[in-house]
Image (cartoon, rainbow over all chains, first blue to last red; front, side, top):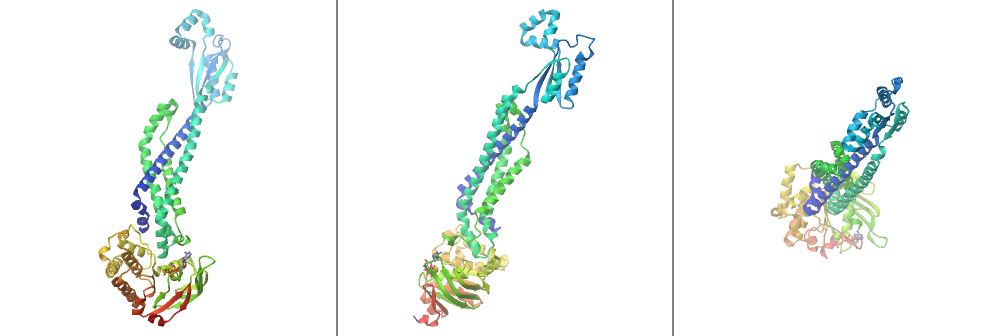
Length: 297
Length: 227
Ligand SMILES: Nc1ncnc2c1ncn2[C@@H]1O[C@H](COP(=O)(O)OP(=O)(O)OP(=O)(O)O)[C@@H](O)[C@H]1O
Ligand SMILES: [Mg+2]
């Protein structure tokens, strides 16, 4: 544990620098994790939005009017739609003329009165339709159009298009920041390693003189960097666990689409911490001396 | 124990710091290395301590060739050498005791923990440093720093001690404190090489003398004492 004691010397000689570095590293890690987490969530929301759409299937006005044509009955058509949808999880709602008029009355009362004034002819102008919500593919829509008694099929994918586009933009921006912050973390780690090396290379040449191995020469610097990275990771995780719900609430307030953000899994958090520690070790290894440096001046 | 055959060392092509040095030091000897400043004494010590390799020639320490030995062998050689450098460097934010104890953590001595502690206290006492044992190294005077380096090298109980002007920063009294320790260690079987400018020491304690002049080992005679 001698090398551990030696490794902590920079904390004695320049404590402020080390604390600042620790704080900055933890801060960068929290930033990295937030941006990464947002990007991941946005990507899954985009996937969901792209798969999900609202399809309106309008019935021909003649459906249900002629008892002599058995395939032009509402129930038969509903079964045909269900067959087309198969096992995919799509909800289907039927709106008949009466329900439509009732809905119309609440939002456009005058229009509703005019339609009602038509009397029996009203049935020919009030639409009847099925509303399908869920992942409906383009081919299914084509198949639906072929069912007899269906006047037309309308799909809502154009409506969510702008939303998915802006969410995708958020996704790419978050990826950019993820990369930038990772780079900043590694850079800061190496900068502080270079700074601390001054203090450790003198000890390394002493250890060499006493017959220590190359590993023993490196250890003080490696430990120092490793512990710095580890403690910044621990600090970052603590901050993240505390701040994540807060961040989630703010993001949810930003857009209804962002209300479905999920908490990050602990495994991902651990993976980030583990990589941080690994980079700490590597930065220590690459900046430590396993050979004599003092005489090369 | 130490053999040099036509050893030369140069840092640049123009000047040779050591020039064709032939030398043989036997186990248990006490040897002075004399020579003006810039003669190459420190350089010779760095070679013997296997800190650096000779440019040409054959150097062997404890019977192992410095050039052809594996890294592990060189490490074992270094563990058996106590080196008091001319430019002493201590770990400034460690105490005197910690500085001496630290060198024991990297091999050299096979003492148990309690024994080692006792040994260090004894050495510090001999060097009149016991009252400073908890002082930080950066708070020491030049002479005290040098004596800590003496304690550090001796605590390892090396087979070979090389001391590069170990009394350079000492007053008359402490010069003899240090010399007394080195001579005692030699009596107990340690091979000791001392580089010094102090003719007084050489005259009072008559031992084998080596004289380096401009990188050449010019004479090796006891007649030097009288000069
Ligand atoms: N690393 C080095 N690079 C270049 N030249 C060096 C190096 N080390 C020593 N020298 C040169 O080698 C010569 C001998 O140096 P050395 O330190 O061995 O002398 P010294 O006998 O120990 O002198 P002093 O009594 O002043 O300590 C000097 O001229 C010095 O400038
Ligand atoms: Mg010298």
